[in-house]
Image (cartoon, rainbow, N blue to C red; front, top):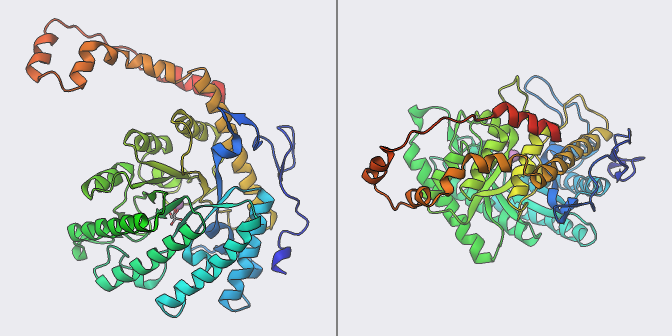
Length: 436
Ligand code: XUL
Ligand code: CO
């Protein structure tokens, strides 16, 4: 029986740092107050439907290793309903405050566009009923515009306007459902919005199509009164060789060009940041600096592999820097920590996905607690402020405000003799390690 999948497993509870039971929280103590908010309200954990309930453990060299009763043996809508039961059971066992899904994770493709939309709405009815009594809320919804072969040359950036229109049909339905279920954000990861070869690609045309698609989505969001932001999820490559939403900086430029700043922000993923040649905290800091920070897909890549391994985030120092950045800006607004992460294909026991989430939730909680302390002590903020203190003088402020010409600044520089100062990197690295 599908609903017995987690039979014998009790809901996960906080048991303190000394617990050795992998199905207890050691640091994630949801009611503990951290910087004026409950820990649960800071971390806003979300379970990703796709990795936990739709991925059967395949890789390019082998088939299913995760034999899930809701993945075969009945008609697709019956399986989708069974999957929903298992999913909500897992949310309950983990006491998860949020979940996230693509349309195709929760409901099968229909025989036509309207059939697919009807399937999605039928499952959304089930979610709506379950959410009346369940605690879990929807962090975000999205449409899968990359798996079906019709999208092999892109969705919004497809050379064929009929594919573009079909994508509009799916994205409208997915936003409608996200809105109906009280979703707090709507995500667009440009899965195949990119190219394989310039020999067949008109970049300018495709960028205009993408700008047009998002502008229509933003207009529609306002029309239906969807209050949350649209979030673009940057990724530099995979599945296409070159993705248009390469990284935060690229997305910022795109949003500015198509006048979408204000309505569209970013959903930053650790593994994508690293594939783009950045660190996770670089992407997060840049998003805050440019005022487009939205939400996080929390996971990790493998330092030795050049692809999106989507492993569970376990690196406490890295997560500490992430939480330091988020806490410094007052915490999440509509965003949260969405586990866009999957267990390894050898982790075949029903308990494995639960253990993975618990371990990563604890890593995030440790990062949050360390970040709180670091901010209290101004451990990094103090030295950072000192480093830029010169810019607080009236003259430096006037320069930055654009009140001085190049000639004026050049003239004043004639009496200066600036002295280099240490960047103190190793000192700061040592400070970080005191807290983790
Ligand atoms: C793919 C990825 C997606 C998005 C949602 O790398 O991260 O799962 O998060 O489409
Ligand atoms: Co993601």
